[in-house]
Length: 165
Image 1 (cartoon, rainbow, N blue to C red):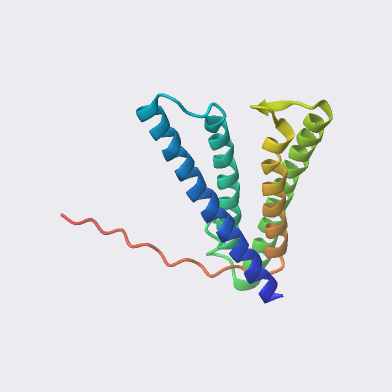
Image 2: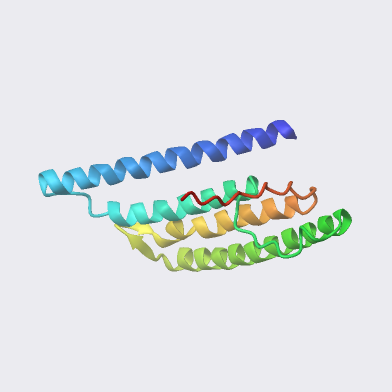
């Protein structure tokens, strides 16, 4: 199981890296084409925006994996270990439910646009552009669901706030 998880994590990291480098390269090419040759690709700007959506959702998936997502921990440090574990499980299940709800409604949107044949830009089907939402949030929901059955991550060390004169 650990081997499968490591492979999935490596795939996530690879996709994130390739997508980021691709977006940077495409943006650079568009800037060069516009500024030096007074031309460019009409479809590239909306495609870059779509790429940023995918990048954000992949980044959120990695942040969830590494427990580096935004979290508001009001009571976690004050609770005894047993209750902390229960609170962690409940928070993970709630987060999985919210992400699952977003994924479900995203899937309904994708299905609706698929049936209507809507277009996003330059002939690209809208459902293909929107597929990032149910896929990304579905994977985030799955990860939180699995994390509900694992022990809570260790508390991060406090960051010292030093002000130098």
